[in-house]
Image 1 (cartoon, rainbow, N blue to C red):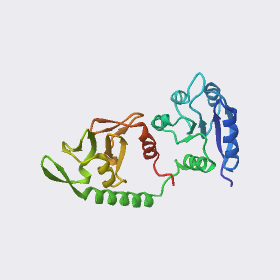
Image 2 (tube, one colour; image 1 turned 30 degrees about the horizontal axis):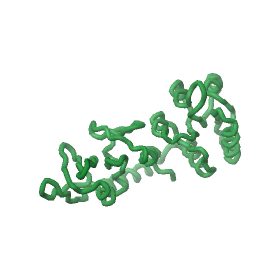
Image 3 (tube, rainbow, N blue to C red; image 1 turned 120 degrees about the vertical axis):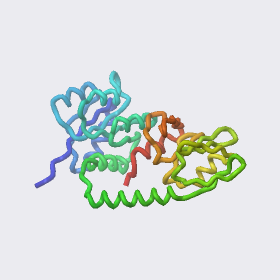
Image 4 (cartoon, rainbow, N blue to C red; image 1 turned 180 degrees about the horizontal axis):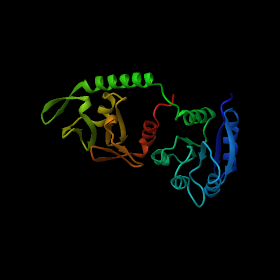
Length: 249
């Protein structure tokens, strides 16, 4: 018995965007187009009487913006945002969209988004979950136990990498924030960025380098670690988005 096709709709005020997405979808056999909506109100009317599994949604539409439309839905299908505006990506992930495609996007990038949307709810084998969790735990433990010396207050402090929460550049020195304490050092933040493992530390602002595993929450403009709000610099937003997205392969 053939698997049922995934019903999708396109919500965009630009007809050319509909044509591009429809052409791309035509090359994916398990997708079936069920609706074209050119504004949020048309989409709301259709969804009131029909069910779809996948939605391609533009952000910048007249009368009701894409994200405002999403907030009106009590339940919704998988959502792939298609837009020319990168600066709203983090807000999109806060609304649990599946992926965020920047126009113009290639077929390869489009296909990755569709694959993510159509497999996101597929169950993972328990053995795979166990193995992945063990690998992650081992890697984190190895990183956390690595020790470095930081010069500050006329002495060298030996600390575990796992104790660093974030680093703040303050003029000619840096503040290294640990749990319940901090160290002032004349080492530059760029030197920390080059020496610390990139799998565990990320530059999110010209003045801030953070430990990824210490993140409590992320908003469109800031990251919270231990009740400290760390701004996200415009230059670094794409890196934060990639962190939220997770691996693409």
